[in-house]
Image (cartoon, rainbow, N blue to C red):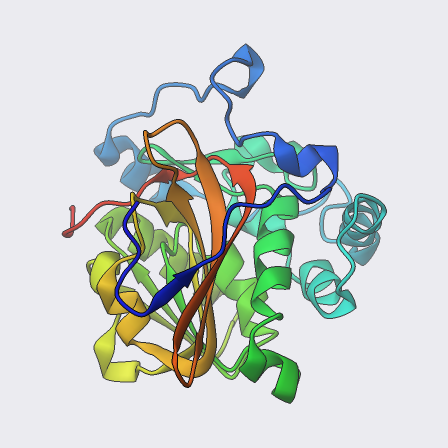
Length: 277
């Protein structure tokens, strides 16, 4: 993959991460991870209109979320700010009622339209990496965050507890509306949801101290780098040359340009341009 002008390339490294982070999300070699076929969009809208927020089963208990966080901590997530945010966001409120029993397992779950809510460990890992940016280190917060791929709104809810403002862009209209409904029901503030082309970022609110993406392409879009503040950081999946796999890439912007570091392998949906109804 050709690096943008001004980007210094750091060779891929193979640091020792917990084994769970070396596994790809939804690895097609493991049948149990394959997603069931998705229903037509009309059915999703019908079900959404009938949906009642799941309660009971202990899912509203802070203890359930704390047990999930304890597992993440034992597996290597060390930033207590990130863990505390995860402990306060009710993940079961972002998944379909039929799947709430799995909401606090470390697994991705289908949210319709060929998309998934990411594993808690992946959300935690990527946000933990964001905290390594110069601006975040200096202030102790993620500042103004651009999220590419709202999905159901779960990650935006976590980010809202750690940042000054979250701008979240979603190209699928049905998911944009789903995120709006989920976040609205929980009265999540400081999140602006944008229905648009995530590859273009969102220039009206730039520059951003942190950019995080839930989809990966062959390279980071130029718009993201242009909208990143000096001292800011991008964390995103990127396809390796040859299309063999995706890896997490961290790009920092400094006074003289950009620095890029490659981290562990992941599996996210492809990054696409345009809007889709």
